[in-house]
Image (cartoon, rainbow, N blue to C red; front, side, top):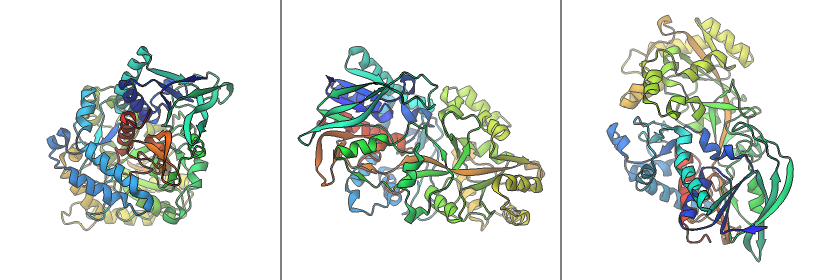
Length: 550
């Protein structure tokens, strides 16, 4: 048994931020993680590095007018807070938007973080001005993507390791939070055998020993449940989204297992909004997987035709990049788990991006030359997308519509009809040259191209799908891909965990996804993107700077 000031459980982004802030204040920290050292950074390492920032120089240079007031309106319209449990989530939401519109960017900039100059427009909504969606582009891609987001905090943590203020203990799995007289006093658990694997792969759970550590404060930053399909199905909101899909793919590694949730509940912590979650509809099976059931999310531009499993075109706001949960609900209402994108090579080249640091090596390497060559000058899509087109089992490439539909039926259970598909594409193509189009998706394409960032890099010039000059035709079978837990442990603005009576638990804190990114779910029902990494950074910072923590 040994001791420190604060025990941190989980070495993801929130844990690194909190550890750095605590050590800056002179606190002695022991950080525990069940995985090997090369897994440090957790899910954030695999991310695209997008951050929800407000009224930034990057936005202003792209002609985007944003403000705290507009962002807060968008956030609240998306969150749709409607429960008595939403008191602290609402407080966290307001605090985060203030942070994102104020101190966040200069603080990160001073640590060396930089952003790609073209700001992305994610989750556009597509319904009402006071409803879900971003009114303007706010998705700032960190230069260096996920690793570039983790880097400044890992650098700070490792500097404190050298001074002895932080100790990193890998392959240490927490199994209990020790409480005495209604106060947290430490943790205990098992030491797992050394098992050095490639980052993200499943590691051994063989036990070599046990441990107990004492501290007046324990901060849980252990992440969500996206790698544990049983837990995802258990809390699935059937009343809002219907039955959970029979088949899903995993957007996160297997170690994102939700294990610490029950352990923290046993110490008195209260989970709220567990039924709020964020899973994507544009997943494809990774042809070169790292973790079990490894899926990659397509980040689509607005032009691909989106069809359900039976070949019916989805109605607005179920358009690419507009409203994730509405689209998820619509797809599941068909009784099938998959849907389809149909596009041309021109759309694939300009509009299909893949989420994940490993799928964007040009951004990850911070090479302007590679970005320009691969994303602007190249006649093909970026290499990672072309690799999926060649090797991915969900991709169908054909020179004729007949061949395309034949491939769709081969992979999708024979559910689509050639003439139904043809009629919908012909109707869509008939509106391409019409500036007064009544096709809502083409209206959205025209609106996107009014933003020079989309026109430059993310939205293809409207063209007819059935014109051979624009081919080949491409169909992509899309799966439901797990990702984020929006609910979590109820916390105050210091990150201190509350019990079932709404009382603060002495010595127990939570940050990151396990706390719903703050308060037990600061997103409410919907995320605006860039707010997952942003929430890890903000909640970790809040806890690390809290005077309530020992």
